[in-house]
Length: 472
Image (tube, rainbow, N blue to C red; front, side, top):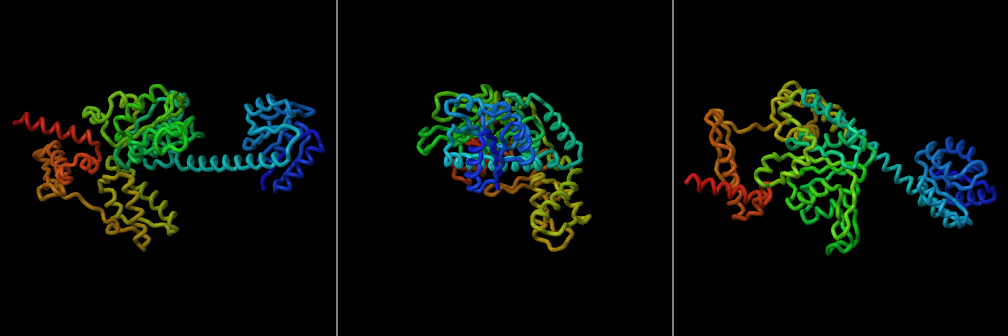
């Protein structure tokens, strides 16, 4: 039952308010002066406080921050005599939720208190979710004892102590690493270890949003800005106000949006689609990519100025094959996690299975390891994982130690590392041409299959054509 504290020196009015709210299902307590109000708020911990501005021993506006300090979660509604709205507005600036003018309309009172209770419940739920996310998104989520993992954790700790991250022009952070290495975990840890931890953390997957909607999603739009814009909408930059916006897979961002993002970072302003005026933003920007951005810059697929603007602070996460010391801890972590998730008994790993896990190269890194453990615990009945339960695939290696890559619709490429043949450009050419032929020379479809932009594919094909003419 929601708890209401009424702080009102007029006894008859206070009882009338108490009866009305009690009839609406609220638990109501009374205080007739500031001293009693402070005593009551400490014991009752009310959800809502109805506070009169004029009290016999103090001023309501002066009392308001003291009440909030004693019960930080309480929502305050100020009551004031007609003609004192200016005082009520000052009280709202001091943290009040709403104000009512006397004489009090009891039906209006009940509705306002109900809104205040709902507001408080939403705030409590949001606070709970944020605390829950903070508890599960800190450094504890980054599992491992390898030198590189410990260095990553120490870097995040240092960044968490960086007061510059609280500034409106907080320095951007670029996290690089292969797919599945845990770049999102590092980004969350940076946020929840830093000065913005009590503010929103907004995760944006740059590849999941269509290019034609990306600007609207990031910057927002006004009603009527385009055909389907039936109402105005705040962009994710505004939703993340005061907190962090994490731009995942930034390396695949469309070139047109790269220019607009660069302007937003440099000016710390955004302009919603259809708006004529810019809006200031206060967010910490963290970006991540699995691409080689310097190479993308050289090939014309990524803006050089945006790359340097993003990498004010750069963090590189090592692939799992370079930190095999972490595998054993990670396996234990994922076993406990997935067994608990599915209500299973705890399982162990045989020595042979652990040896196989340690020897695997993990092209999908930590994400691949997690998925493998999850799949395995769901399919075995024994309490111990065996090597044959894992079904780990091995690379195709020939008798002479060469690597064979089968290109569907194209040739089988035999890579002889001893002789250094073929070169990487030759392998790339074979794969690009196979995709081009497979799609019937459809440039856009081939680019989608290869996971690159149409412009990037055209650039690579033109470069290969120029190289071939030069050789001729």
